[in-house]
Length: 245
Image 1 (cartoon, rainbow, N blue to C red):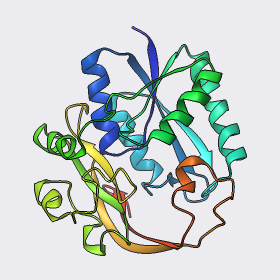
Image 2: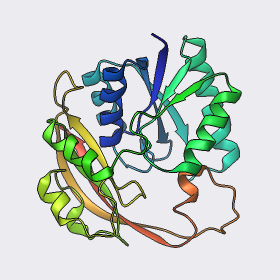
Image 3: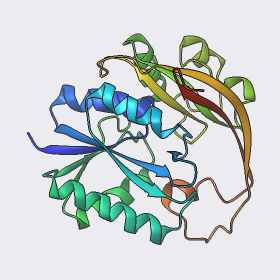
Image 4: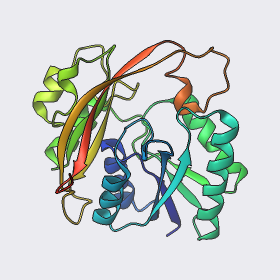
């Protein structure tokens, strides 16, 4: 079986994709690769503290490779750091990369091209799955996650910090993708079939952050670009490791 590294976000889609790739036997996932903010020491986009990310990786039984980035990095910085990370994984014997993407065609094409240049294949085990069915599967199969970030243009403050359960799904507005695939919300998955044990944490404060727009032609990395053409507001629910001050 080929060895693979997983482009790990810390959220529900990653957890589902990890289980799917193991069930299908596409590859042996041997490590997790996660982009993090150097300034804030948190998972990019999700805002999860690195301490919890490390505990999550330990509960999954997989080593963690961190890619340190500025907030909303430019394409040049992003590609240099990602190329170095992919080279590390290639040197460790990985020939595949796994992603939890579901239907963002442009992002998939970009990932595949860059990986092909490095001699790495790409696997998308959730690709084109119905997102409502995916979220229902996540819930019924015993996965557990908490909402850590919501786009204020799509969801109000009350959604930040909620458990990802049937009530959450029922309360989503009709214009919000059930899995938040358009960036409507992000999660931290802390328990489920792929975990040896649950990650222990407690909820902290909910804060609102505003990101000012940049020009549409500014050369931002692909994950950041889709959120920076207009002023955006996000609600973040801080999660703290259990027992921390």
